[in-house]
Image (cartoon, rainbow, N blue to C red; front, side, top):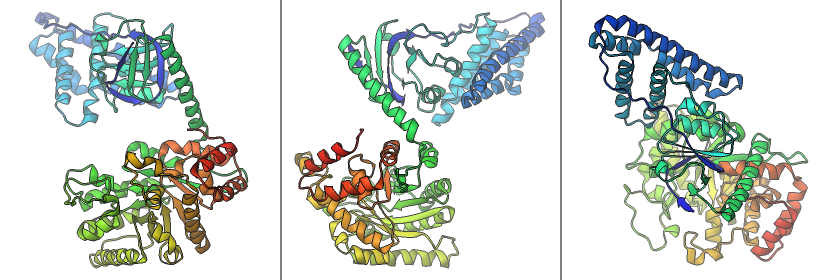
Length: 575
Protein backbone atom coordinates (compact mmCIF):
# COMPACT_ATOMS: atom_id res chain seq x y z
CA UNK A 1 0.00 0.00 0.00
CA UNK A 2 1.34 3.41 -0.99
CA UNK A 3 0.00 6.92 -0.46
CA UNK A 4 0.61 9.58 -3.13
CA UNK A 5 0.08 13.27 -2.40
CA UNK A 6 0.51 15.01 -5.73
CA UNK A 7 -1.63 16.96 -8.17
CA UNK A 8 -4.64 19.16 -7.68
CA UNK A 9 -8.12 18.01 -6.74
CA UNK A 10 -10.44 19.67 -9.27
CA UNK A 11 -13.57 17.71 -8.38
CA UNK A 12 -14.32 16.65 -4.81
CA UNK A 13 -15.28 13.19 -3.56
CA UNK A 14 -13.93 9.71 -2.86
CA UNK A 15 -13.59 7.02 -5.52
CA UNK A 16 -12.73 3.34 -5.02
CA UNK A 17 -12.10 0.96 -7.91
CA UNK A 18 -9.72 -0.94 -10.14
CA UNK A 19 -7.09 0.97 -12.11
CA UNK A 20 -7.98 1.39 -15.78
CA UNK A 21 -5.02 2.81 -17.67
CA UNK A 22 -6.47 4.65 -20.65
CA UNK A 23 -4.22 5.40 -23.60
CA UNK A 24 -5.59 7.47 -26.42
CA UNK A 25 -4.61 7.13 -30.04
CA UNK A 26 -1.24 8.87 -30.39
CA UNK A 27 -0.39 9.73 -33.98
CA UNK A 28 3.04 8.74 -35.27
CA UNK A 29 3.42 10.92 -38.33
CA UNK A 30 6.74 11.30 -40.10
CA UNK A 31 7.43 13.80 -42.85
CA UNK A 32 5.74 12.54 -46.02
CA UNK A 33 6.29 14.08 -49.46
CA UNK A 34 3.91 13.21 -52.29
CA UNK A 35 4.17 13.35 -56.06
CA UNK A 36 2.85 16.58 -57.55
CA UNK A 37 0.28 14.60 -59.54
CA UNK A 38 -1.40 13.50 -56.26
CA UNK A 39 -2.03 16.98 -54.84
CA UNK A 40 -5.74 17.21 -55.69
CA UNK A 41 -6.31 13.65 -54.53
CA UNK A 42 -4.71 14.47 -51.16
CA UNK A 43 -6.92 17.54 -50.82
CA UNK A 44 -10.00 15.43 -51.58
CA UNK A 45 -8.92 12.88 -48.95
CA UNK A 46 -8.48 15.68 -46.41
CA UNK A 47 -11.99 16.92 -47.25
CA UNK A 48 -13.38 13.42 -46.67
CA UNK A 49 -11.54 13.19 -43.33
CA UNK A 50 -13.03 16.52 -42.23
CA UNK A 51 -16.51 15.33 -43.14
CA UNK A 52 -16.05 12.15 -41.10
CA UNK A 53 -14.71 14.15 -38.14
CA UNK A 54 -17.68 16.49 -38.42
CA UNK A 55 -20.05 13.52 -38.21
CA UNK A 56 -18.27 12.01 -35.17
CA UNK A 57 -18.18 15.31 -33.26
CA UNK A 58 -21.81 16.06 -34.10
CA UNK A 59 -22.84 12.66 -32.70
CA UNK A 60 -21.12 13.43 -29.39
CA UNK A 61 -22.70 16.89 -29.32
CA UNK A 62 -26.19 15.51 -30.00
CA UNK A 63 -25.63 12.75 -27.41
CA UNK A 64 -25.05 15.44 -24.80
CA UNK A 65 -27.87 17.67 -26.05
CA UNK A 66 -30.33 14.76 -25.80
CA UNK A 67 -29.46 14.60 -22.09
CA UNK A 68 -29.82 18.39 -21.75
CA UNK A 69 -26.13 18.47 -20.91
CA UNK A 70 -24.82 22.03 -21.28
CA UNK A 71 -21.31 20.65 -21.90
CA UNK A 72 -22.35 20.08 -25.50
CA UNK A 73 -20.95 23.60 -26.05
CA UNK A 74 -17.44 22.13 -25.82
CA UNK A 75 -17.99 20.34 -29.10
CA UNK A 76 -19.25 23.44 -30.85
CA UNK A 77 -15.67 24.65 -30.48
CA UNK A 78 -14.39 21.40 -31.99
CA UNK A 79 -16.70 21.74 -34.99
CA UNK A 80 -15.44 25.29 -35.48
CA UNK A 81 -11.84 24.02 -35.48
CA UNK A 82 -12.60 21.32 -38.05
CA UNK A 83 -14.38 23.84 -40.30
CA UNK A 84 -12.02 26.77 -39.70
CA UNK A 85 -11.32 28.23 -43.14
CA UNK A 86 -7.92 29.62 -42.17
CA UNK A 87 -6.77 26.18 -40.98
CA UNK A 88 -8.23 24.51 -44.09
CA UNK A 89 -6.44 26.95 -46.40
CA UNK A 90 -3.15 26.53 -44.53
CA UNK A 91 -3.35 22.75 -44.86
CA UNK A 92 -4.21 23.09 -48.55
CA UNK A 93 -1.15 25.32 -48.95
CA UNK A 94 1.09 22.72 -47.28
CA UNK A 95 -0.20 20.08 -49.70
CA UNK A 96 -0.08 22.24 -52.87
CA UNK A 97 3.14 24.18 -52.35
CA UNK A 98 5.26 21.84 -50.21
CA UNK A 99 3.76 18.59 -51.48
CA UNK A 100 3.14 17.34 -47.95
CA UNK A 101 0.79 14.41 -47.53
CA UNK A 102 -2.62 15.21 -46.02
CA UNK A 103 -1.55 13.48 -42.79
CA UNK A 104 1.70 15.41 -42.45
CA UNK A 105 0.02 18.71 -43.43
CA UNK A 106 -2.61 18.23 -40.71
CA UNK A 107 0.08 17.58 -38.11
CA UNK A 108 2.23 20.56 -39.16
CA UNK A 109 -0.58 23.13 -39.05
CA UNK A 110 -2.23 21.93 -35.84
CA UNK A 111 1.14 21.61 -34.10
CA UNK A 112 1.91 25.18 -35.12
CA UNK A 113 -1.15 26.48 -33.26
CA UNK A 114 -0.53 24.17 -30.30
CA UNK A 115 3.01 25.57 -29.99
CA UNK A 116 1.71 29.15 -30.23
CA UNK A 117 -0.79 28.64 -27.38
CA UNK A 118 1.88 26.90 -25.29
CA UNK A 119 3.81 30.18 -25.19
CA UNK A 120 0.87 32.20 -23.81
CA UNK A 121 0.86 32.88 -20.05
CA UNK A 122 -2.94 32.97 -19.73
CA UNK A 123 -3.92 29.64 -18.14
CA UNK A 124 -7.40 29.73 -19.70
CA UNK A 125 -5.90 29.98 -23.19
CA UNK A 126 -3.37 27.25 -22.42
CA UNK A 127 -6.17 24.91 -21.40
CA UNK A 128 -7.53 25.18 -24.97
CA UNK A 129 -4.50 23.24 -26.15
CA UNK A 130 -6.39 20.08 -25.24
CA UNK A 131 -9.10 21.01 -27.76
CA UNK A 132 -6.57 21.45 -30.55
CA UNK A 133 -4.86 18.15 -29.73
CA UNK A 134 -8.22 16.41 -29.58
CA UNK A 135 -9.27 17.65 -33.02
CA UNK A 136 -5.81 16.98 -34.50
CA UNK A 137 -5.76 13.41 -33.17
CA UNK A 138 -9.29 12.78 -34.40
CA UNK A 139 -8.40 13.86 -37.93
CA UNK A 140 -5.21 11.75 -37.95
CA UNK A 141 -6.96 8.71 -36.44
CA UNK A 142 -9.58 8.87 -39.18
CA UNK A 143 -6.79 9.27 -41.72
CA UNK A 144 -5.20 6.08 -40.37
CA UNK A 145 -8.50 4.19 -40.56
CA UNK A 146 -8.60 3.51 -36.79
CA UNK A 147 -12.09 3.33 -35.22
CA UNK A 148 -13.05 5.67 -32.37
CA UNK A 149 -12.59 4.41 -28.79
CA UNK A 150 -14.01 5.92 -25.63
CA UNK A 151 -14.76 5.32 -21.96
CA UNK A 152 -18.44 4.57 -22.39
CA UNK A 153 -18.28 0.82 -21.70
CA UNK A 154 -16.55 -0.40 -18.53
CA UNK A 155 -17.30 -3.73 -16.83
CA UNK A 156 -16.39 -2.77 -13.23
CA UNK A 157 -15.93 0.24 -10.91
CA UNK A 158 -12.78 1.87 -12.27
CA UNK A 159 -10.30 4.65 -11.61
CA UNK A 160 -9.28 6.14 -14.96
CA UNK A 161 -5.55 6.88 -15.21
CA UNK A 162 -4.32 8.76 -18.28
CA UNK A 163 -1.61 11.09 -19.43
CA UNK A 164 -4.41 13.48 -20.36
CA UNK A 165 -8.09 13.21 -21.24
CA UNK A 166 -9.50 15.13 -24.14
CA UNK A 167 -13.09 16.42 -24.24
CA UNK A 168 -14.19 13.57 -26.51
CA UNK A 169 -12.77 11.05 -24.02
CA UNK A 170 -14.77 12.42 -21.10
CA UNK A 171 -18.00 13.44 -22.83
CA UNK A 172 -19.48 9.95 -23.14
CA UNK A 173 -17.73 8.19 -20.26
CA UNK A 174 -19.51 5.59 -18.18
CA UNK A 175 -20.76 7.73 -15.29
CA UNK A 176 -21.69 4.67 -13.22
CA UNK A 177 -18.44 2.73 -13.35
CA UNK A 178 -15.99 5.63 -13.51
CA UNK A 179 -15.24 6.12 -9.81
CA UNK A 180 -12.47 8.69 -10.22
CA UNK A 181 -10.14 10.29 -12.74
CA UNK A 182 -6.40 10.93 -12.45
CA UNK A 183 -4.30 12.53 -15.18
CA UNK A 184 -0.67 13.58 -15.44
CA UNK A 185 -1.58 16.96 -16.94
CA UNK A 186 -4.53 19.32 -16.72
CA UNK A 187 -5.68 22.13 -14.45
CA UNK A 188 -8.72 23.54 -12.72
CA UNK A 189 -10.07 25.17 -15.90
CA UNK A 190 -9.50 22.19 -18.22
CA UNK A 191 -12.40 20.39 -19.86
CA UNK A 192 -11.61 17.30 -17.79
CA UNK A 193 -12.09 19.38 -14.65
CA UNK A 194 -15.31 20.93 -15.95
CA UNK A 195 -16.85 17.59 -16.88
CA UNK A 196 -15.63 15.79 -13.75
CA UNK A 197 -17.26 18.43 -11.54
CA UNK A 198 -20.45 18.38 -13.58
CA UNK A 199 -20.68 14.57 -13.39
CA UNK A 200 -19.61 14.65 -9.71
CA UNK A 201 -16.69 12.32 -10.39
CA UNK A 202 -13.70 12.75 -8.02
CA UNK A 203 -10.71 13.96 -10.01
CA UNK A 204 -7.09 14.79 -9.28
CA UNK A 205 -5.18 16.28 -12.21
CA UNK A 206 -1.53 17.15 -12.77
CA UNK A 207 -0.16 14.05 -10.99
CA UNK A 208 3.37 13.70 -12.39
CA UNK A 209 4.44 10.22 -13.55
CA UNK A 210 1.35 8.49 -12.15
CA UNK A 211 1.37 6.08 -15.10
CA UNK A 212 4.75 4.78 -13.92
CA UNK A 213 3.49 4.23 -10.37
CA UNK A 214 0.37 2.14 -10.98
CA UNK A 215 -0.52 -1.24 -12.44
CA UNK A 216 -3.50 -2.12 -14.59
CA UNK A 217 -6.41 -3.56 -12.58
CA UNK A 218 -4.91 -3.01 -9.11
CA UNK A 219 -7.16 -1.54 -6.42
CA UNK A 220 -6.96 2.22 -5.89
CA UNK A 221 -8.56 4.78 -3.60
CA UNK A 222 -8.81 8.40 -4.74
CA UNK A 223 -9.61 10.82 -1.93
CA UNK A 224 -10.07 14.11 -3.75
CA UNK A 225 -11.17 15.80 -0.52
CA UNK A 226 -7.63 15.38 0.85
CA UNK A 227 -5.71 15.14 -2.47
CA UNK A 228 -4.63 11.63 -1.48
CA UNK A 229 -4.18 8.64 -3.81
CA UNK A 230 -3.75 5.19 -2.24
CA UNK A 231 -2.48 2.41 -4.46
CA UNK A 232 -3.02 -1.28 -3.73
CA UNK A 233 -4.81 -0.66 -0.38
CA UNK A 234 -5.48 -3.49 2.07
CA UNK A 235 -9.03 -4.60 2.87
CA UNK A 236 -9.21 -2.64 6.13
CA UNK A 237 -8.24 0.59 4.37
CA UNK A 238 -10.81 -0.03 1.64
CA UNK A 239 -13.48 -0.53 4.29
CA UNK A 240 -12.49 2.71 6.06
CA UNK A 241 -12.75 4.65 2.82
CA UNK A 242 -16.05 3.03 1.87
CA UNK A 243 -17.46 4.49 5.09
CA UNK A 244 -15.88 7.87 4.32
CA UNK A 245 -17.40 7.69 0.86
CA UNK A 246 -20.86 7.00 2.31
CA UNK A 247 -20.52 9.96 4.69
CA UNK A 248 -19.42 12.23 1.84
CA UNK A 249 -22.31 11.14 -0.41
CA UNK A 250 -24.77 11.63 2.46
CA UNK A 251 -23.57 15.18 2.90
CA UNK A 252 -23.85 15.78 -0.84
CA UNK A 253 -27.47 14.64 -0.71
CA UNK A 254 -28.14 17.23 1.99
CA UNK A 255 -26.58 19.87 -0.27
CA UNK A 256 -28.74 18.83 -3.23
CA UNK A 257 -31.90 18.62 -1.18
CA UNK A 258 -31.58 21.89 0.73
CA UNK A 259 -29.45 24.27 -1.34
CA UNK A 260 -32.53 25.67 -3.13
CA UNK A 261 -34.74 25.62 -0.02
CA UNK A 262 -36.05 28.87 1.41
CA UNK A 263 -34.63 29.23 4.97
CA UNK A 264 -37.95 29.35 6.82
CA UNK A 265 -38.77 27.62 10.11
CA UNK A 266 -41.66 25.16 10.31
CA UNK A 267 -43.85 27.89 11.78
CA UNK A 268 -43.02 30.46 9.11
CA UNK A 269 -40.12 32.62 10.38
CA UNK A 270 -37.66 33.62 7.65
CA UNK A 271 -33.94 33.61 8.51
CA UNK A 272 -31.77 35.47 5.99
CA UNK A 273 -28.65 33.50 5.04
CA UNK A 274 -25.71 35.28 3.42
CA UNK A 275 -22.19 34.44 2.30
CA UNK A 276 -18.82 35.24 3.83
CA UNK A 277 -16.37 35.77 0.96
CA UNK A 278 -12.78 36.90 0.42
CA UNK A 279 -12.72 37.16 -3.37
CA UNK A 280 -15.00 37.49 -6.37
CA UNK A 281 -14.66 34.16 -8.19
CA UNK A 282 -17.07 32.71 -10.74
CA UNK A 283 -18.08 30.04 -8.25
CA UNK A 284 -19.07 32.70 -5.70
CA UNK A 285 -21.04 34.65 -8.27
CA UNK A 286 -22.93 31.49 -9.27
CA UNK A 287 -24.03 30.99 -5.64
CA UNK A 288 -25.97 34.26 -5.66
CA UNK A 289 -29.20 32.41 -6.42
CA UNK A 290 -29.02 30.38 -3.19
CA UNK A 291 -28.47 33.18 -0.65
CA UNK A 292 -29.86 36.51 0.49
CA UNK A 293 -26.71 38.52 -0.09
CA UNK A 294 -23.08 38.91 0.98
CA UNK A 295 -22.95 39.16 4.76
CA UNK A 296 -19.19 39.68 4.93
CA UNK A 297 -16.87 40.69 2.09
CA UNK A 298 -13.40 40.43 3.61
CA UNK A 299 -11.82 43.18 1.53
CA UNK A 300 -8.38 42.65 3.08
CA UNK A 301 -7.82 39.70 0.76
CA UNK A 302 -7.67 42.13 -2.17
CA UNK A 303 -4.67 43.65 -0.40
CA UNK A 304 -3.10 40.38 0.74
CA UNK A 305 -3.24 38.81 -2.74
CA UNK A 306 -1.28 41.72 -4.27
CA UNK A 307 2.39 42.59 -4.03
CA UNK A 308 1.52 46.28 -3.95
CA UNK A 309 -1.32 48.45 -2.73
CA UNK A 310 -4.41 47.79 -4.89
CA UNK A 311 -5.41 50.96 -6.70
CA UNK A 312 -8.73 52.73 -6.34
CA UNK A 313 -9.77 51.67 -9.86
CA UNK A 314 -8.84 48.05 -9.21
CA UNK A 315 -10.92 47.97 -6.04
CA UNK A 316 -13.78 49.77 -7.77
CA UNK A 317 -13.96 47.11 -10.49
CA UNK A 318 -14.01 44.28 -7.94
CA UNK A 319 -16.72 45.92 -5.80
CA UNK A 320 -18.72 46.82 -8.90
CA UNK A 321 -18.66 43.22 -10.13
CA UNK A 322 -20.07 41.76 -6.93
CA UNK A 323 -22.66 44.54 -6.50
CA UNK A 324 -23.91 44.10 -10.05
CA UNK A 325 -24.28 40.37 -9.58
CA UNK A 326 -26.20 40.61 -6.31
CA UNK A 327 -28.37 43.51 -7.58
CA UNK A 328 -30.60 44.66 -4.69
CA UNK A 329 -29.42 42.00 -2.27
CA UNK A 330 -27.20 43.55 0.43
CA UNK A 331 -23.44 43.32 -0.04
CA UNK A 332 -21.76 44.00 3.29
CA UNK A 333 -18.26 45.26 2.55
CA UNK A 334 -15.96 45.22 5.56
CA UNK A 335 -13.18 47.75 5.23
CA UNK A 336 -9.55 46.72 5.55
CA UNK A 337 -9.07 44.37 8.50
CA UNK A 338 -5.28 44.00 8.65
CA UNK A 339 -3.22 43.29 11.75
CA UNK A 340 -3.15 40.48 14.27
CA UNK A 341 -2.55 37.40 12.12
CA UNK A 342 -2.86 39.31 8.80
CA UNK A 343 -0.01 41.45 7.49
CA UNK A 344 0.94 43.21 4.25
CA UNK A 345 4.48 42.91 2.93
CA UNK A 346 4.34 46.38 1.37
CA UNK A 347 2.94 48.23 4.41
CA UNK A 348 5.17 49.28 7.28
CA UNK A 349 3.69 47.55 10.32
CA UNK A 350 5.97 47.65 13.39
CA UNK A 351 6.24 44.44 15.38
CA UNK A 352 3.94 44.45 18.40
CA UNK A 353 4.03 42.27 21.51
CA UNK A 354 0.24 41.83 21.41
CA UNK A 355 -0.81 42.39 17.78
CA UNK A 356 -4.42 41.30 18.34
CA UNK A 357 -4.68 44.11 20.88
CA UNK A 358 -2.62 46.51 18.80
CA UNK A 359 -2.83 48.79 15.78
CA UNK A 360 -5.13 46.69 13.63
CA UNK A 361 -8.37 46.93 11.61
CA UNK A 362 -10.04 50.36 11.99
CA UNK A 363 -7.15 51.59 14.11
CA UNK A 364 -4.75 50.88 11.26
CA UNK A 365 -7.11 52.69 8.86
CA UNK A 366 -7.01 55.72 11.15
CA UNK A 367 -3.20 55.57 11.09
CA UNK A 368 -3.09 55.26 7.28
CA UNK A 369 -5.94 57.55 6.33
CA UNK A 370 -4.94 57.96 2.68
CA UNK A 371 -5.12 54.20 2.25
CA UNK A 372 -8.49 54.23 4.03
CA UNK A 373 -9.87 57.02 1.86
CA UNK A 374 -8.86 55.22 -1.34
CA UNK A 375 -10.89 52.20 -0.28
CA UNK A 376 -13.87 54.32 0.73
CA UNK A 377 -13.79 56.19 -2.59
CA UNK A 378 -13.70 52.91 -4.54
CA UNK A 379 -16.58 51.48 -2.50
CA UNK A 380 -18.76 54.57 -2.79
CA UNK A 381 -18.15 54.85 -6.54
CA UNK A 382 -19.28 51.22 -6.89
CA UNK A 383 -22.35 51.78 -4.70
CA UNK A 384 -24.49 52.91 -7.66
CA UNK A 385 -24.33 49.36 -9.06
CA UNK A 386 -26.07 47.59 -6.21
CA UNK A 387 -26.97 47.61 -2.53
CA UNK A 388 -23.81 48.55 -0.61
CA UNK A 389 -23.62 48.15 3.16
CA UNK A 390 -20.30 49.55 4.46
CA UNK A 391 -19.06 47.92 7.66
CA UNK A 392 -16.12 48.88 9.86
CA UNK A 393 -14.13 46.35 11.94
CA UNK A 394 -12.92 46.41 15.54
CA UNK A 395 -14.91 49.41 16.66
CA UNK A 396 -14.40 49.81 20.40
CA UNK A 397 -16.11 53.09 21.27
CA UNK A 398 -18.54 55.77 20.15
CA UNK A 399 -15.47 57.96 19.47
CA UNK A 400 -14.35 55.41 16.85
CA UNK A 401 -17.72 55.73 15.11
CA UNK A 402 -17.55 59.53 15.13
CA UNK A 403 -14.05 59.45 13.61
CA UNK A 404 -15.14 57.01 10.88
CA UNK A 405 -18.11 59.23 10.02
CA UNK A 406 -15.88 62.30 9.84
CA UNK A 407 -13.49 60.61 7.38
CA UNK A 408 -16.39 59.21 5.39
CA UNK A 409 -17.97 62.66 5.12
CA UNK A 410 -14.73 64.10 3.75
CA UNK A 411 -14.66 61.39 1.06
CA UNK A 412 -18.30 62.03 0.15
CA UNK A 413 -17.64 65.78 -0.04
CA UNK A 414 -14.70 65.20 -2.37
CA UNK A 415 -16.77 62.93 -4.65
CA UNK A 416 -19.57 65.51 -4.82
CA UNK A 417 -17.07 68.29 -5.55
CA UNK A 418 -15.64 66.27 -8.45
CA UNK A 419 -19.13 65.30 -9.67
CA UNK A 420 -18.52 61.59 -9.16
CA UNK A 421 -21.72 59.66 -8.65
CA UNK A 422 -22.40 57.48 -5.61
CA UNK A 423 -25.47 56.15 -3.83
CA UNK A 424 -26.14 58.47 -0.90
CA UNK A 425 -28.44 55.84 0.66
CA UNK A 426 -25.75 53.21 1.31
CA UNK A 427 -25.89 51.62 4.77
CA UNK A 428 -23.38 52.39 7.53
CA UNK A 429 -22.58 49.68 10.07
CA UNK A 430 -20.01 48.28 12.45
CA UNK A 431 -18.59 44.95 13.51
CA UNK A 432 -19.38 44.01 17.09
CA UNK A 433 -16.19 42.29 18.24
CA UNK A 434 -14.97 44.22 21.28
CA UNK A 435 -17.08 43.72 24.45
CA UNK A 436 -16.87 47.42 25.32
CA UNK A 437 -19.03 48.39 22.34
CA UNK A 438 -21.81 46.06 23.55
CA UNK A 439 -21.88 47.94 26.84
CA UNK A 440 -22.99 51.05 24.92
CA UNK A 441 -25.06 49.22 22.30
CA UNK A 442 -28.07 51.48 22.97
CA UNK A 443 -26.08 54.53 21.86
CA UNK A 444 -24.54 52.64 18.94
CA UNK A 445 -27.95 51.60 17.63
CA UNK A 446 -28.96 55.28 17.45
CA UNK A 447 -26.10 56.28 15.10
CA UNK A 448 -25.54 53.25 12.81
CA UNK A 449 -27.82 51.53 10.30
CA UNK A 450 -26.83 47.98 11.21
CA UNK A 451 -24.32 45.80 13.06
CA UNK A 452 -22.81 42.37 12.57
CA UNK A 453 -21.31 40.26 15.33
CA UNK A 454 -17.87 38.84 14.61
CA UNK A 455 -17.94 35.90 17.00
CA UNK A 456 -14.33 34.87 16.34
CA UNK A 457 -12.80 38.03 17.76
CA UNK A 458 -15.60 38.62 20.26
CA UNK A 459 -14.78 35.27 21.86
CA UNK A 460 -11.07 36.08 21.76
CA UNK A 461 -11.53 39.38 23.59
CA UNK A 462 -14.20 38.09 25.95
CA UNK A 463 -12.13 35.10 27.10
CA UNK A 464 -8.74 36.90 26.90
CA UNK A 465 -7.37 34.16 24.63
CA UNK A 466 -5.10 34.62 21.61
CA UNK A 467 -7.08 32.41 19.20
CA UNK A 468 -3.94 31.70 17.15
CA UNK A 469 -2.01 30.35 20.15
CA UNK A 470 -2.34 26.53 20.49
CA UNK A 471 -1.00 26.68 24.06
CA UNK A 472 -4.21 28.33 25.27
CA UNK A 473 -6.71 27.02 22.71
CA UNK A 474 -8.69 25.11 25.35
CA UNK A 475 -9.61 28.45 26.95
CA UNK A 476 -11.12 29.73 23.70
CA UNK A 477 -14.73 28.62 24.35
CA UNK A 478 -17.03 29.82 21.59
CA UNK A 479 -20.01 27.92 23.07
CA UNK A 480 -19.56 29.27 26.61
CA UNK A 481 -22.77 30.58 28.24
CA UNK A 482 -21.00 33.92 28.69
CA UNK A 483 -20.67 34.25 24.90
CA UNK A 484 -24.38 33.77 24.34
CA UNK A 485 -25.26 36.09 27.23
CA UNK A 486 -23.21 38.98 25.84
CA UNK A 487 -24.52 38.34 22.32
CA UNK A 488 -28.06 38.50 23.73
CA UNK A 489 -27.35 41.95 25.12
CA UNK A 490 -26.40 43.26 21.68
CA UNK A 491 -29.26 41.48 19.89
CA UNK A 492 -31.91 42.70 22.34
CA UNK A 493 -30.72 46.29 22.03
CA UNK A 494 -30.63 46.36 18.22
CA UNK A 495 -33.94 44.52 17.87
CA UNK A 496 -35.56 47.01 20.27
CA UNK A 497 -34.19 49.86 18.15
CA UNK A 498 -35.48 48.20 14.95
CA UNK A 499 -31.97 48.03 13.47
CA UNK A 500 -30.69 44.91 11.65
CA UNK A 501 -28.14 42.81 13.52
CA UNK A 502 -26.51 39.68 12.14
CA UNK A 503 -23.76 37.20 12.93
CA UNK A 504 -20.94 36.83 10.40
CA UNK A 505 -18.37 34.98 12.53
CA UNK A 506 -17.84 31.23 12.37
CA UNK A 507 -20.75 30.69 14.77
CA UNK A 508 -23.16 31.80 12.06
CA UNK A 509 -22.57 28.61 10.09
CA UNK A 510 -22.08 26.34 13.10
CA UNK A 511 -24.80 23.74 13.73
CA UNK A 512 -24.40 24.01 17.51
CA UNK A 513 -24.24 27.81 17.79
CA UNK A 514 -26.69 28.81 15.05
CA UNK A 515 -29.84 27.39 16.75
CA UNK A 516 -29.00 29.37 19.88
CA UNK A 517 -28.36 32.57 17.90
CA UNK A 518 -31.73 32.25 16.16
CA UNK A 519 -33.37 31.62 19.52
CA UNK A 520 -31.73 34.78 20.89
CA UNK A 521 -33.37 36.85 18.14
CA UNK A 522 -30.84 36.81 15.29
CA UNK A 523 -32.62 36.77 11.91
CA UNK A 524 -29.57 37.19 9.70
CA UNK A 525 -26.69 34.70 9.58
CA UNK A 526 -23.66 34.82 7.30
CA UNK A 527 -21.31 31.91 6.63
CA UNK A 528 -19.11 30.14 4.10
CA UNK A 529 -20.84 28.58 1.11
CA UNK A 530 -20.37 24.97 2.30
CA UNK A 531 -22.44 25.62 5.44
CA UNK A 532 -25.51 27.05 3.65
CA UNK A 533 -27.41 23.78 2.92
CA UNK A 534 -26.79 22.37 6.42
CA UNK A 535 -28.02 25.54 8.13
CA UNK A 536 -31.05 25.59 5.79
CA UNK A 537 -31.81 22.02 6.80
CA UNK A 538 -31.58 22.90 10.48
CA UNK A 539 -33.83 25.94 10.08
CA UNK A 540 -36.53 24.25 8.01
CA UNK A 541 -36.87 21.21 10.28
CA UNK A 542 -37.57 23.15 13.51
CA UNK A 543 -39.85 25.89 14.83
CA UNK A 544 -38.88 29.28 16.16
CA UNK A 545 -40.38 28.21 19.50
CA UNK A 546 -37.90 25.33 19.68
CA UNK A 547 -34.98 27.67 19.01
CA UNK A 548 -36.18 30.17 21.61
CA UNK A 549 -36.62 27.39 24.19
CA UNK A 550 -33.08 26.17 23.52
CA UNK A 551 -31.61 29.68 23.78
CA UNK A 552 -33.46 30.53 26.98
CA UNK A 553 -32.10 27.38 28.61
CA UNK A 554 -28.53 27.76 27.27
CA UNK A 555 -28.02 31.13 28.94
CA UNK A 556 -28.88 29.54 32.31
CA UNK A 557 -26.12 26.91 32.01
CA UNK A 558 -22.70 27.14 33.63
CA UNK A 559 -20.16 25.50 31.29
CA UNK A 560 -19.45 25.10 27.58
CA UNK A 561 -19.75 21.30 27.87
CA UNK A 562 -23.24 21.66 29.32
CA UNK A 563 -24.21 23.84 26.35
CA UNK A 564 -22.87 21.36 23.77
CA UNK A 565 -24.48 18.36 25.46
CA UNK A 566 -27.82 20.14 25.79
CA UNK A 567 -27.97 21.27 22.14
CA UNK A 568 -26.89 17.85 20.84
CA UNK A 569 -29.62 16.22 22.91
CA UNK A 570 -32.32 18.51 21.52
CA UNK A 571 -31.29 18.96 17.89
CA UNK A 572 -29.93 16.49 15.38
CA UNK A 573 -26.46 17.80 14.41
CA UNK A 574 -24.36 16.99 11.37
CA UNK A 575 -20.85 18.06 10.61
